[in-house]
Image (tube, rainbow, N blue to C red; front, side, top):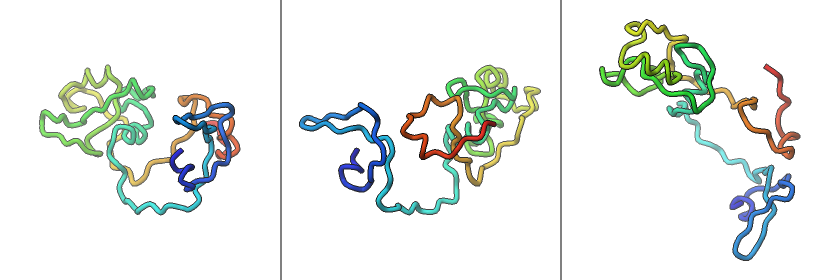
Length: 152
């Protein structure tokens, strides 16, 4: 809303009957915006280390039991435990489901007899987020502006 009101974006589509109210005015809620001027982002050569990016790198799949889980059922596991001097970084953290993380406890994968599906590495980039059934339905106003999705 602030970008629109400060004329930094153009509204291409509005959400049907949805509106936003202030103390004195009512505004139809924008659904699709276009920047009036491209904002150059500084080149950053590293992917931010955070929970969401680790889950994305590991494709929301437990690296021990190899099962894909919803976001809320995942945890982070330190391959070499923090309690034994392990680091909290890309090459020591993997996605794990709760039961596998508890079973592994403060052991290494070899000690727990739980081999990793993939060795953790720092990604050079992350794939763009794909629209999948895991997301709720998209607003109809967005459909003309999204790439055609290939089932996969």
